[in-house]
Image 1 (cartoon, rainbow, N blue to C red):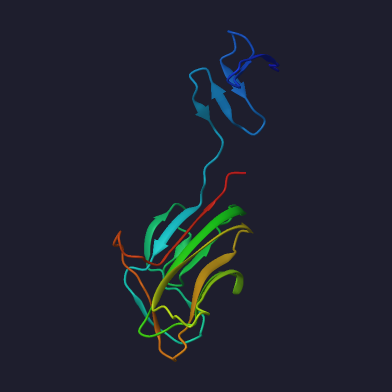
Image 2: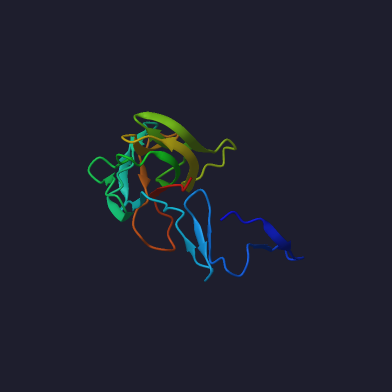
Length: 193
């Protein structure tokens, strides 16, 4: 049944069909039934959310280091490996993904810069940097990075953290699950297209 708009109101509502039509089907598999329920449309899976359970200590000065996410909060497709700290796109689940990561850096002394990098198959694809150029060095700070990327089945995604302390000291990534303390986490999901 092909329905043409039969009326429009001042509230930008469109009435389709007539009183005998109880389902509107769209070409993308979505249906709206007479009850107003939305049927179909897909899901945002795989979806994962991981974090550090405790501080990751001893990050060497100015050496990009894989963040050791060891606590899984959500993993709909069992695609995150806590031994390799890697999300691997499952077979048949390629597509467009939203990826979000936050690293909370803590230094014993000063810092020049911190980098948080999203790594795909061993190569950095997106980086965010905090750079303390003013000489008023900070000893702690969070960096959040968000990106939308096309990923294929088998693509391996990790997060690297890099800190340049300016004084050669090591850095700690803050972990744990305390709501009022900045922490280090990684999240992602496939977008419905």
